[in-house]
Amino acid sequence: IDLRVDYLRQGVGPSAAPGGPPRPLREVVEEAEKAHVLRTLEHTGGNKRRAIEILGISPETFYRRLEVWGLHRRDDERE
Image 1 (tube, one colour):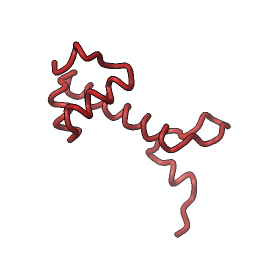
Image 2 (cartoon, helix red, strand yellow):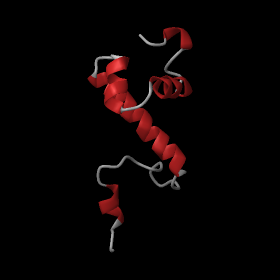
Image 3 (cartoon, rainbow, N blue to C red):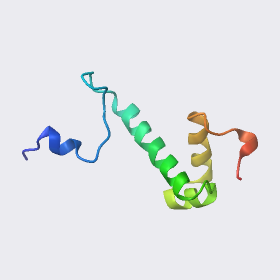
Image 4 (cartoon, rainbow, N blue to C red):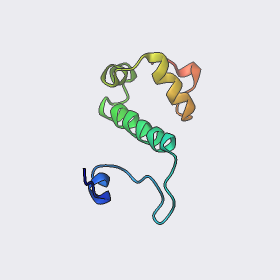
């Protein structure tokens, strides 16, 4: 299969700073996951329960990810 790099980049965010080296896949995936969760929260008007349903993840996973990203405190849980 002949795949050109510009074809592979279509619809995908940058994996490196312009002119910089590629970043580890784990970083790129986490960045994409965070962006998707935030877009979903925006779509639901901040309704976390609905976002969890749309994303198809457990509430525990959802809140753990928000904590890792510094976007959630335990005392705010399950609004």
